[in-house]
Image 1 (cartoon, rainbow, N blue to C red):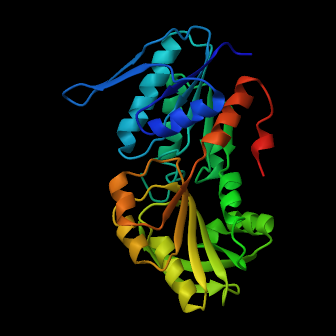
Image 2: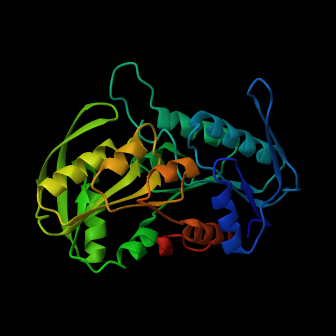
Image 3: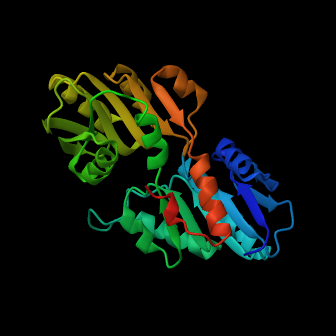
Length: 313
């Protein structure tokens, strides 16, 4: 055992942190989070954490840089308060799409973020559905990249339609295949050509989708361009129904308008990121499933030195 279990929440997703505590039968450790008039962040842990096993829950979502800096300051505060071990629980790891150099004189932002968290005092990372699995290698400490699959599979199994799992691009084929195998469903791929960042053009479908319910799988929905292009192409190829399914609802820019206009009957996401009420009001197709249960199990198993791999499906 690593001392008393303590859960501390950043400001990005307080509802998820409270739900995790409900599953664990504990309460959030009080923490002061304020901003000075010039935008600087003030952090103060308001309980004794000396010798404790502390888990800091914070998604690095919009505003990404603010929440990332807040997380770093909380980790530093806990390190200086002599916590025995500090684990960052980051359901959505920002900058994960910048995991390599794609042009000259460009940074590897995901690696820099990993270094910052490590220097700040993090001893372990728990995250969900990393955009690129190799980011785990950016850390010289344990990383638990768990999956939202149990939550999403539970929802999809309630449907009795003849389903086909669809990857909206070639890069997501492995993810779609994994879901198809567990649901005993078909598999299809949408061939996509990207002309510029956040702009996608879907071309044609590889696989049989006619008269079937197509579930377009991705790890995140950002501007929703990829998802919506895929949905339209699937309908053109005779799909009976199209459902969007993703772990991280980033939903930036024109995403809500695009999802509302796209031929989706449902958009299934998780609460790794909070969705503001005004966004949900724009699109009545969104269905949010909670990952609090699997995060709570992961935290419990890490704290008790039990196996985390039992959470994988």
